[in-house]
Length: 299
Image (cartoon, rainbow, N blue to C red; front, top):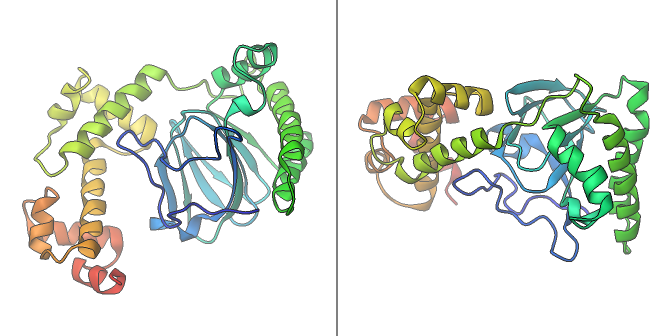
């Protein structure tokens, strides 16, 4: 059975950018999605992370994958793995169909077991992202197996045991491919840096209506301003100020369609002191004025 995210046009996260949608259940921590990146807000699946791992296959189109400090342009036929707790974003310039699965590694083996310690944990510790290219014959078996996982999800009757069997095969190939001695894989982002980023994002999300400076953001994690800029650029490819402005604009857009407040009130309530600046920035991002957005979006 195929699923889309419950709020299909959005990726829903908490203040740390952790995705809030449950992926499966405690009894079966696995879920399959069939999605078109173009259908999401701003034609992207915005920055998020989850404790589960993720496997994606690009069925149609070309997309941009941003993960950690890297940006990849990937074409149809490419598959990739996103590790647990790794922040990532998908962008599209047209329709991009991506069947994908998100699941907890404990589905494959319980933590503390020999299988988990010897084969699962080493991968979780080794790589942020692993890409499998359709142009590489050595990747064909992996991509075929990933496609088989998706095909099983389309069956009407119980597919849990078939799915788990294929996931174990998929993980074995990933393990064999992800040798930490090789230099083709990016080391996993430092957990300390990820934690610092999340603290700063939480501060922005909580205080966005106020006047926030770079010094204020840096103070939350006791870093220099240059270090804060480096953390933001390496992890989410933007500056703290630009992130703050875009977050304010997203909050303003929500208020435009959920309240009857005036544009000037909404601008003020989301941290913009100058209504003219707010309207200019809003049009840059949404390609329409706040008033036009309200008229075309409000039901």
